Length: 344
Image (cartoon, rainbow, N blue to C red; front, side, top):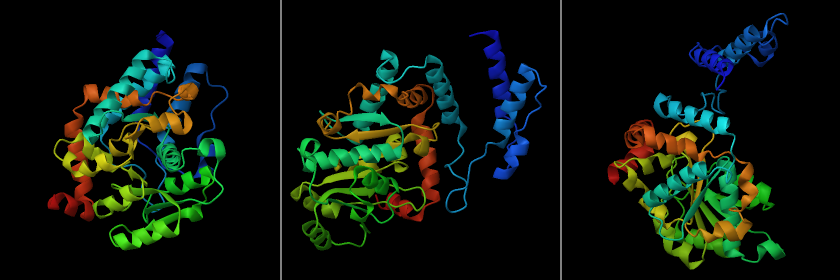
């Protein structure tokens, strides 16, 4: 590393510590205008400090700041991992070590879930992409010839009425149509009612949630398990936030239902506060990842090896302690999840 780069990194690290300042979108034009007479080093410092100073989180749809709890431990390690990934500039399947790190974490998490031989997983760029690939797997599971023949009839997804928007996005991108996403309340709906929905439609997938950030939805589908098996419907669990529990030896028992699902999505930048982005799709039948869309072939080579961030945190942080503390804070802030924990 050159001395010049070291100096620039020192400026950047110093800027990270500066106090954040909020300003309107219109004010950026003034705040981010720099004196053309500044020398290179001075201009670099001015630009970097301004970027860090005025880069604050946008409020979500409820007017609250995006992001979960501000825990610095894993954020620092994932930031360092991000810097390593960017410095090496290796994509997926172009660095044996980074690929090994991802595979090691996938196998570790598969063990936490309880998936057996033949299960697989892949890090993908975000929850929406994970949801999309799980839907493609589910469609291929129900209609194995769909890659060659396509479909000549509508198909439907049953999802929690509080499901993440990624479900609708997946339906949109697959050409299913958002009108074919049937939203239900799994706590209220009866097995008979679910059977009626299945028999009146062409349901190929059921999506439940294990802790959605905004409202703490926890869907337990034990009462529907026989129905799901009978009709050979793919069950996907969105555990993008609740996946925290998998890393906690104290609360991992809450995820016992995961092993019955066909696929699971976990966002580690959400549930463990790692740097954006670090999303994982787990599939119980790993061959589906290959068969449905050749997802494991080299077309992924352009993506960053985001799983390395999780691997480095696992090596240098106590993720068990970290996940337990985070999950307890989730429980304290969510009555429904607290009741689930107390009853177990």
